[in-house]
Image (cartoon, rainbow, N blue to C red; front, side, top):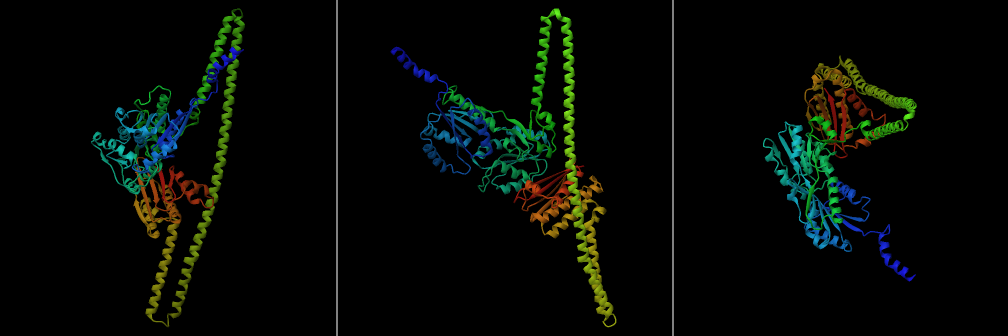
Length: 635
């Protein structure tokens, strides 16, 4: 008995160590970011890191994340305070891995890791570099290099726009901007026939003003602009949006987070892929596959990415894009969306059919004596299967037809509602217009004619008693009053149907409409119109005139602007009409959500006229940033 107890006590540690559910030793990983949380690049890298480090088989890892926020801190003063903070905060933790993301965090880790993390394996993620990547290796670090493929990005733009003569390169004076500068300044030697410009020391307003003047046969390369010369810090999304909102030419870039904010595309770096590669480097160190202090270097494959909306805006076809390009935000059909399900169903059907055939063959071979009966049974099974398949197909077709009819009925009901709303609004507008004409006739023409009548009566009474000069003066006053009445009648006639449009066409009518509006509204105006008389018939010209007239009326009522611009341009088989102002702007979604049938006739009528012309209508607005109405019409 004693020997058995001693044996159990000796084996107890081994049994406890091998027991399932035994808590493993916790590994600590510090992720040190150069920027702040919420920054688009930071969140992409975090997504890749979490995908690897927080996998289900990595439950013994505890992540600690710190953000240096280098854009707002002074490196000479605040980084020493940050070092002291890390020393106090993690005094009781021994890190197994430190992952430094982007150059400033990498430089900080290189300088202080001996005092702060002496036993930790070091991983650098997002170090700015180019080819060959070996030149970007950091001793003692497993390094993921950002391969800035500037030349491939520019080549993709020149392939799409071979007539390009000028490229404006946007880069700031921030820490990362200075790291990028050598790669950007090396570009011109590869393109001797193209003029490169590098605007420097500009505020965001100055940069937007510069970009606004960039014309055709030009491209913009957006490298980095998150800090302007005034010291204002901007997010990537806002910086790209502000620049793209005034840019008339395509914008190329090397970072995928600029897509969706106005950039066309280019040879892109993916932050998620960079984070995944850095996470795999860290796991190799933790598992002992890579020794601590060893030097490794790698980079991720860049990808040609382009924004679908910008491709449509600049009328770029897929055949113009580089090979292996991927288009984002591309609408997908129902069949494409559910292709996985379709392939799965097809695979299951083929597998089942194959199984049936194999079983039939085995049964046939095992029962040779009953060959004839087996043959009849197989034929019967085939007929049943065929009939079942036919019935199933017919049932599916019937269900699809029923669903399609329901969709058509819903669309018809929706169309009826829209037509009913348009009819109500049309009646309301007619009544309002009749009331306005009635008021005009009563208040202006009626009173003017009444005054004219009194003047005539006074002259009749005074024709024998007053002098000739007095009568002449009265006749002159009558002539002036009659001229005023005639001018009011003409104004009412012009409001109802612009004579200038019928006589001289849309070009002269728009020029007169915009000039008159600028004069009456006391606004500064910029008018850039081309001749479009030959592209549209009389009916289409009247609709275009009313669209511009409604846009100007909305600006006069709501914008509180001091300047506006009306421009018409032609590109290939499209006419681009833009009406923009510097007014108070608005939130497009909120305005559409709050429009009532009684108050939304202006916007509804504009949209309906554009739809009749087979064009498109877009609003570009933001509170405090003005409004731009973009109308695209086919010719």
